[in-house]
Length: 244
Image (tube, rainbow, N blue to C red; front, side, top):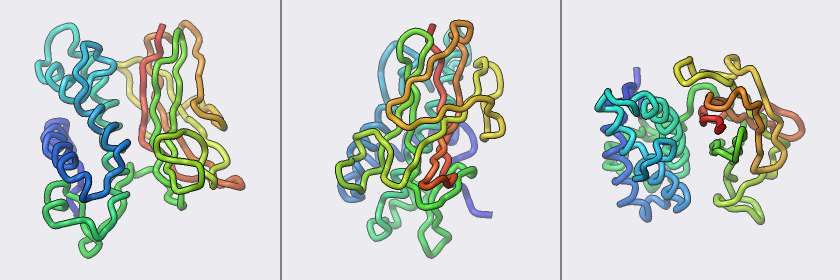
């Protein structure tokens, strides 16, 4: 069995991130990493604020590792979302690095295999790869009882860039499948665990919730619907607390 790129435990991934993120920073130009992707990665990894909801992995890990105190549970909850987002963005970055740019040191550091040793794009295990670029989505608070869904374009078409939002030319619409749950309850693992969905044709997309759901989590997956009406790739789980 091949070794997974990402370690299977939080401790293992913490060590992985502390090695890989600085390495990608130092080699970004040579590997032609998109500056917007690198900026987003660094924000997810290291954002030194006092607000747990916006802290980076480093700051959350300090609280999580202490395993005591009033903020431990909240930090543990946020760490799951940060972990999912970092792994997804790393996969996007790895998939966009041209094969000719990869050195042995790059592969040894990242754990990413080459074409002669079983190279495959890194996925979450639930996607259908049908020619659509990976979905880079996130949820953010948008006032009282509302969240806003962002989906970043993959670029490569006239008038678009990775910094802008909007449907790509081969996309008919997006569907956001999600579950509303308490932070202590299980997160969805695939579309079958989701009980709600939103059809997304314009971005960013605002989702309003009843006041009774304030403080709960909205967790789910964005799926691409390709033209004319073909189910496409499914992104990694995104999650956020519904503001009250």
